[in-house]
Length: 293
Ligand code: GUN
Image (cartoon, rainbow, N blue to C red; front, side, top):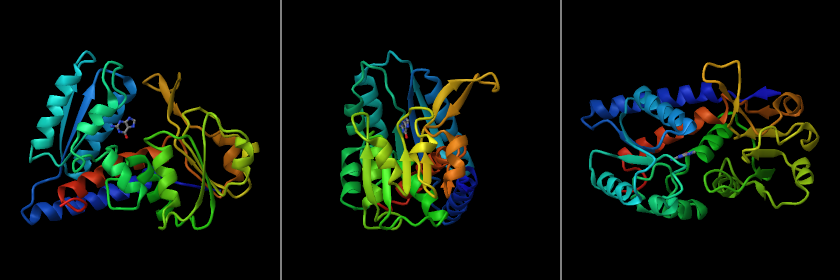
């Protein structure tokens, strides 16, 4: 069994990005600039956004954090998005999800200029992804593919089961894994809360990408020997062993599944660090107008 070290790869990618940024600055270009909108005080969102701001520093980017109380109106957010769309100094921006119930998330996503949508959530980016055109790839799927690439994991013609059908992970990663590309070229099955025979699908899989948000869902009896396991789960569970009082738990019963695998990602330290690095990569692409002129 080989542990996929997402932290190590993420650090390497951040260094590559930082070197690229210094080259850009030396040639007279401005530093890439990422803005983030954070609404309310959800613990998970606060942590993710703090990590994103820190990653910007490590990559040599400028970052701006725009905070709003949970009571902010949809109209106020739309006005802020309009300003960011027009701000020529801002290369890309994100609105941290989830948003409070009184705000229409889809309306917010669609208000973002797709050329600054470094989360890759806008329907134009999602649509372009599904037909294999250049676009901003959403961060977690992109991070997963980068890990498969850097660990030279063969995906061509393999059976890949994706557990979960979210717009952020399940659907886009399934789409990427079936594209005519490397990584990709896999035979993809998507299982979700209404699927029957999930165990049988999993037992037939060479690669399982678990993105359900159900801690410990994937157990050893569901995994064939030599499978590649990518754990996207990051449920916060109470813990007496950490300062924050929480720890992250994946969708995979790591202890019992790991001995059966050829490769497996840990939680934390697997997919998580790659997600943030992919956002940095998209911001660099946005600053260089590599995808949209
Ligand atoms: N909430 C959970 N994951 C994400 C993400 O990748 N981007 C944003 N904006 N919100 C999230």
